Image (cartoon, rainbow, N blue to C red):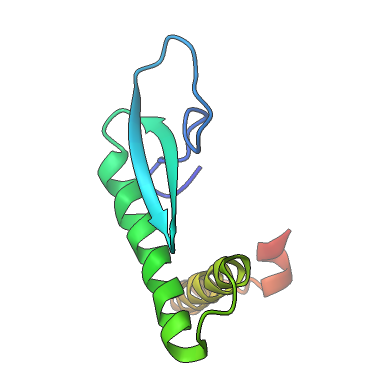
Length: 105
């Protein structure tokens, strides 16, 4: 589950029975993905989608149109690298020593 709880079992397009679901459309590049999520989580998913789309647009500006699949993978790697930097900083601040292999497991 994500830090704000958006990835419940009802998110990412997996509709649950008897559960109130929100609906959101996320644009990544030229494609629109329609997702279900917990009620009230729509705005957060829209913001996350906009962040991913922004990374993809940055890559297009820098490297040209290199294919949507490659752009998505590269954006995911960039965002994961940002996350690992934040986790490394948090570990250094808290005094814990967690290596990258431990996070990837």
